[in-house]
Image (cartoon, rainbow, N blue to C red):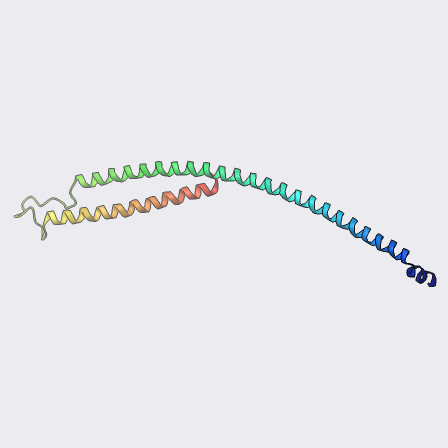
Length: 151
């Protein structure tokens, strides 16, 4: 023990011990920096790979969106054509039944036939408009569902 204390009193031994401590610290720092550089390189590689995957997913989603938008447009056109056809079929006839053959005034039935016809036509147009909006919402929702499911 006294020998050890005697060595520690020697300035050259202390200098050598200090140099060894610095050497170990520097070696640890260099090893830690190398490990960090490897980690950083791995993270960059993973990041680039994820960016490529994200870009391909976005491209696929845009392609599917285009397909679904085209399908929605086609279905909307078909729906509009059918709604117009149905509206024309309803408008070609009368909403009010014909007057009885022996009626004294065939144009009246407790109301003006023209006013009733006009009111029913306006009601039909408004209801048809509501139905058209509802149908468009259904078509849009179904298109969005297909897009989300990847169909």
